[in-house]
Image 1: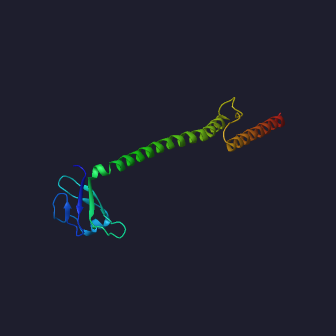
Image 2: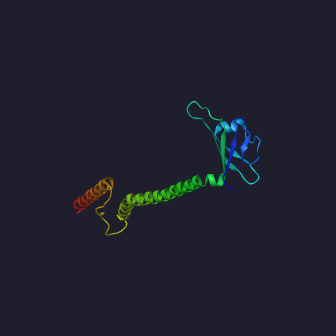
Image 3: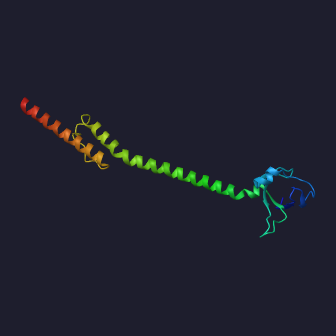
Amino acid sequence: MNEDFIVLDRSGRVLLGSDNGASPYTAAELVSGHFIVHRVEGDQLAAAAVTRGRGDYRGLGWTVVALQPVDTALAGAHRLTSLILLLGLVTAVLGVIAIWWVAAQLTRPLAQLTEAVGRIGREPNARMTRHMHGSPEVLRLSASIRSLLRRIGTAEADARHIEA
């Protein structure tokens, strides 16, 4: 199917094109300016435009209807839709990867601190945590835990001294 052009007179009858003298389109379709034509060969997108005169001449009032297969007419829109979906999918995947990486970077120091505190009292040489790196909150928490462990160590040493 190729592009077709049909010229209609003022009353909607075909002047030029297939089915001369027929009125293939309704007035509502022609007024809307675009509509779908269902044919055995396949659906076609139709665009209608009324001719106008110039100056004082009103013109003949003919309507030109251009027909094109729907698949051909909408091919660019389908490609654009596919491209937008692909870009959205790629952006979503990259976003998930970035969020996973950021979450891992934020939680790694907390996991290390939790592991270090968990070893205290279970392993004979584990009495203090090392300085942690990360967000300001993790640094403050690490410093607070180290300070607490020093106070506990001092209290234990005082208790041993009193006992002795």
